[in-house]
Image (cartoon, rainbow, N blue to C red; front, top):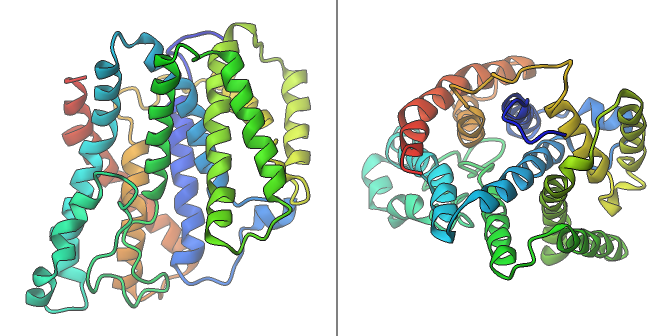
Length: 339
């Protein structure tokens, strides 16, 4: 596994973002269908969770590399803030002051009299409250009130960024530390499986722990990259182990993330599947992720949920991609010059 820019990370991340659109369509567009792949394979997780963990695996690898290459903490955090916040702030401003006034069920005066309108972009700053509601917006949708339900993962990802810096400053950012953290997450996941998931804290842990383990696994692959070789026979064996560990009876351990990480990096550095230059000029995966849910909610309200499922999915993708492109060209890419 070479430390090179010739990889398929961009197309994998975009594919994951598009998969999130597909998965969200089941809940947003009022369908009784279930994810067919999940049912067929008896997976213990949804494809949305799968897509997000792929993001975190790649992020764990790249962010570790970023920290190690950064000369100072300031340089490291500046790069992280400039990557996440500009695009996020713009989408939240557009939502509050353009989408909201046009689609709110309230009259314009009442809408702008609500303090929530002005707090909405500000709430995006700590990331934890980036999924806040707006007055009268999407209140009658099948998935009511949720303005941009995808943004919740950004808080946990940034928390991982902070964790990397903490480990680095403590001089313990190494393979052993990462392995210990992974072991702690796996043991905790197994222990939690014996308790009810109805309580909010338990439910939250069950959702968040796989994200941490995915990020840690990406970190581990960074430290062992020089020792990893991707061969067809091993990839097939790992794929089989992933399918087994993904079963609904075993997935509670979150061990499936280990073979998944191997598969992600095997695909990323594949000599046979080469999309190395895809997204090198226009990396629209982040823009796709932060605009898609909002656009899907808009589409449902405008069409009143009358379109067939796959038409909704197709339109969601077709409409989201141009917004993601503009986000990258007009906001994300120009800001990167200040890294």
